[in-house]
Each structure stands twice: as structure tokens, then as C-alpha cells.
Image (cartoon, rainbow, N blue to C red; front, side, top):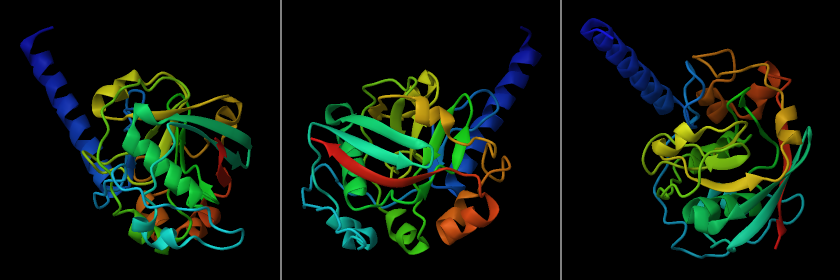
Length: 256
């Protein structure tokens, strides 16, 4: 390859990195790099909390009541069990995620607390890209998003690989994980070097593969939901403009 071609390739790569960084800054969750031409899942950046260090209990909310931690992240910092499982009851069926805390302690603790306080109940899979990943985790209530989008946790070292079925938090850069996570449809091992640390794995891919993916990439890069609007308008925006999206109806810690 000649020097001119090499310089051209370098420019293309640099523009790709810049576009990805800009896309991350505008949303609240970044997921690994997708197939060629697609940006990784991005997530908005929140305030650093040592979720693994603090262990204030976050008991499950009574049925029909909103947990107080939904508006106060400091009330949801319980240390997770070494291993646990979460059932996601979705509009396409149930999905079980097995979590191993040792893989990513901060991520496992955050996920555990969010599930226990009901954060993921009635939350949309707003970014589903065939051959890449499915992203979820912006609450349907804008008031909840206002506080949780700033509730950042510290990064975990990447100990596992983003292979098919693995679950990782989205990010907008170093130490910016908050609430959004994604599940890999395929082996996205290129994401490992970008800092996406898996904390769990889906037992069965059937429900995951059935999620509606017709909207594709999010706005402004694609025709799907705009993360800024989801943050600010919640499910009212999604249901009005993207009626075919699938949702987590309820998330529950089922094991141990």
C-alpha cells in the first residue's frame, strides 16, 4: 500500500474515532464498536460513586410502590452476592442473566442494585442492531434519569470477552458507567480493548434474538430513538414515535 493510501486510511480512522467520541458525548451509553460503519453503544456520563466500596442495603420495593433510591442513588449501593441471576420479563419472553461478581465487581454491584429497586421495570430496548448488540437502560421516567445519569461508577478491568450472550455496561468514556447495558448478539471481541467489561451472560439467546430490530441505529446516525430525547421525555417519546420497541416489563433477582 502506497504512502498516499496509508495517509488516506489514517484520516478515515481518525474521523471514525472523532465521530464515535461525539456520539458518546451526546447520549448516555456507549457500547463496543459495531460492525464496520456502526458506532459502539454509548451512554451518558454520570457522578463517580464507589458502588463496590459502600454496602448500604437496597431492599426490594413493595409491589406498586416506587423505591426511594430511584430518586437517590446513594440509597442503592449494596454489595452484590458473588454469583446471582436476574430474570428479565420482556415483551418477547423471559431472559435470564447469570452474573459473576468477580468478572466486574463494580458493574455487578450496580446491576444488582438497579434491579432490586425496580429501575429496569418498563424500560425499552431502545437500540437493537442486528449482528451487533441490544442496548437498554434509560428509565421511562425523566425525573429518574436526571439523577441516575450522573451516578457514575468506576471502571472494572476487562477480565472476560464480549462474546455472544455476554452482558456489559455501556459507557461514554473512562469511569462513566451508569445504568445502560447491552447484550452481545455475536462475538464483539473488539470491544474488549475499549474497556467494556462483561459482568454476566445470558443463559439462552432465544428471547434476545427475537427483540425488534427494525429501527436500527439511533438518531442522528440512524433512524432509531435519540438518546437525549429518551433521557428528557422518557417512555412517552418512545411509545409515540417507536411503537414497535420491545421492553423489559419487570426485572427480578431470582438467585440466590
